[in-house]
Amino acid sequence: MSQEDIRQNRREKQGVVVSNKMQKTVVVKVDRKFRHPQYDKVIVRSKKYYAHDESGSLKAGDVVSIMETRPLSKLKRWRVTSVVEKTQANVAE
Image (cartoon, rainbow, N blue to C red; front, side):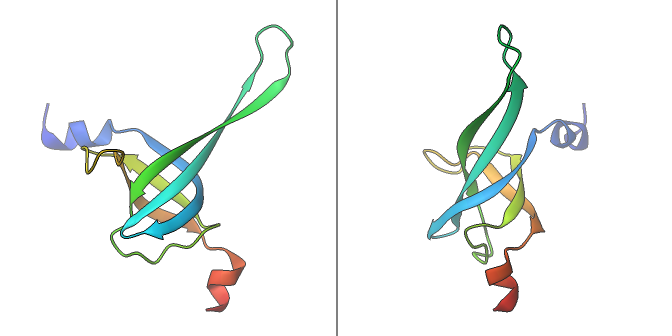
């Protein structure tokens, strides 16, 4: 396998920035929906991921795409690849 093949196999997720209070790090909340096996009701579960934001320009409420990467710190294993949607407050600035 080439280096390019390995990079393409990395997991990607999409979520909302919850916090940007750290330097070059954002907390991204990712929701997943699944149907309960017994009761057949759609359930939403959330998980927070620490992601690397090199630019430091993201604000809470932005929708971003994150990709799995090597460990960058104790908790950081993801990095922001692209901004899907900016919040209305950030567009005005």
